[in-house]
Image (cartoon, rainbow, N blue to C red; front, top):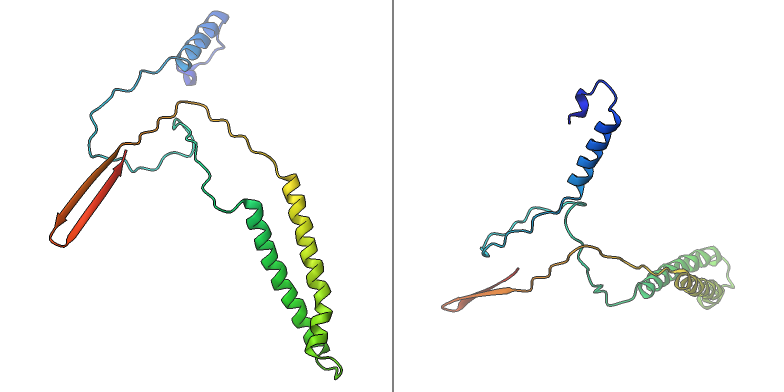
Length: 165
């Protein structure tokens, strides 16, 4: 039924028939895909951001935990800030004859200690507040692990090509 050409409201029977048609069409089972003989064709078109592509579980391959990397980056920032504060203090106090480099370092040492303590407390708070992500994957997932190895060797040159399908 074409909805653009409707000029009158549907009767109850027509609305019921249209609703049944829409529901039947939405829940109609799809035909299983026809199995083909594998060929050398590979479709490299990009997958849609959403749609009929089934979700695939992807393992986490990171070597360093996220909280450790975050603390490391924060420590680098604190270190750079401490150097900046130390340089500022050194430049301000440079004009005084009684100030030596050791005294400037002793003045900036509490700033660096405080900054490191703040970083540690922030890391602990971040670790405590981190949420657990539970991913629920629905739908069929097919994993093909067939590897086609092709090796060509001519003279002193060789080429190996691995196709994962």
